[in-house]
Image 1 (tube, rainbow, N blue to C red):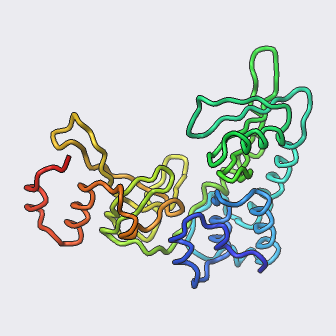
Image 2 (image 1 turned 30 degrees about the vertical axis):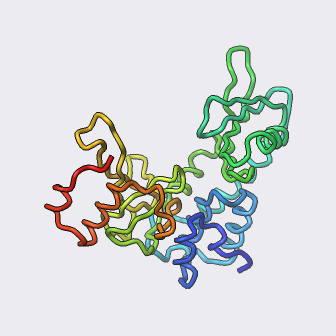
Image 3 (image 1 turned 180 degrees about the vertical axis):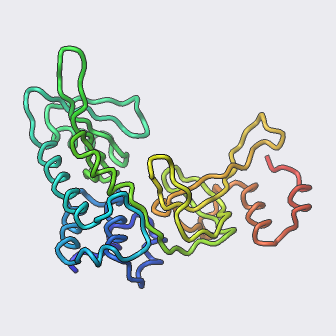
Length: 285
């Protein structure tokens, strides 16, 4: 196999944990599809390689969920439709424009004549931000979305959506697997999307409950602390589910910025203090 699934895992912690483990073909494909760090071209190359290498029976192995019963057949449909959309996003014409906006700053908008110009504009002025570029058909009333492209922090196109491949795209993208990980109850992790510290509260080695859309982020259940001046304790503990692909283990050297209340909670979970001591200790402002 020319490409390693490890190249597509966004989390350093998860990549290291899986480095000496063998994953089933379908699970590798699910991780490749979910990658944000690699370009769509590199992802499609890796998916084709696995499609050509493994049989239908090979793709049935492993513990995972996909709403398509024949994973290999669905994977081929996904690859073909994604390649068609990829060609379309680069094909300019006078009936379309490319609208760009940062995913974390909808206040910025840019309009471009070509996809290449949109990418160049992002790299020149808005590096290290994730972006969304929409190829929109122009009519006399409004711009009608044709294709949506997701751009990672390196300025690379990593995912695509449009109406005619939406069904198979969603089937593969929403597939999820039971991924082995190293997190245990009481571990402090960091959600890299917004640099949020959290404490793991369930030692679950499998996905959590899905939504009505059969979507699952292969998550770990955690508790965070949010400061709130109107709360009697100057803040509140909140339970959140964080994707395995977007969290990292927190080392002692990286604890700066972690709320002291969350460190106390971690101490409680690990047995360093009793529940009574935890409750009696005054809030730390």
